[in-house]
Image 1 (cartoon, rainbow, N blue to C red):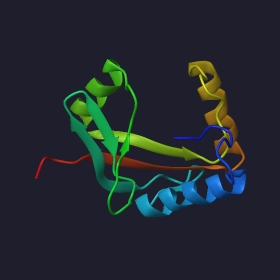
Image 2: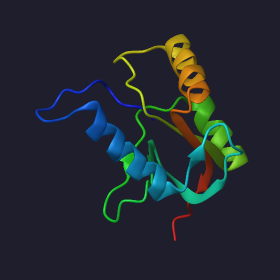
Image 3: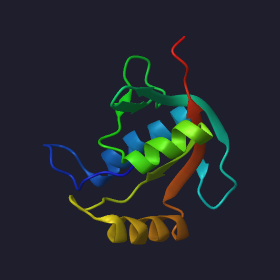
Image 4: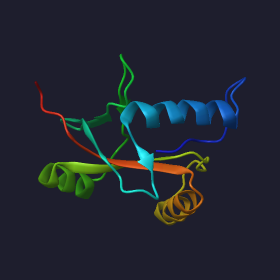
Length: 122
């Protein structure tokens, strides 16, 4: 996860980072340079929809259009890595730009990670 540059009135890099750190704390993620913990059953797969329980008491975050290869991997393994980067990601960034982004934020200590598992329908 990352965020677009500030675009709403009153929104700043600092307010966005504070919100993202709330997600990091709410999910139990740790700095990416450390060994990532297993943060519980936070991944919801319901038909074509995938969402992440990020610790908010009333909402989950829908993950837009994960590819079929990713869905197969998660369905078979039961796990996914969650990474929160604190720096903005340009809208429309492709796979190469995202890979460079991840390398940069991890190296600079601006990313947190953890592994999550699929939540059953109970």
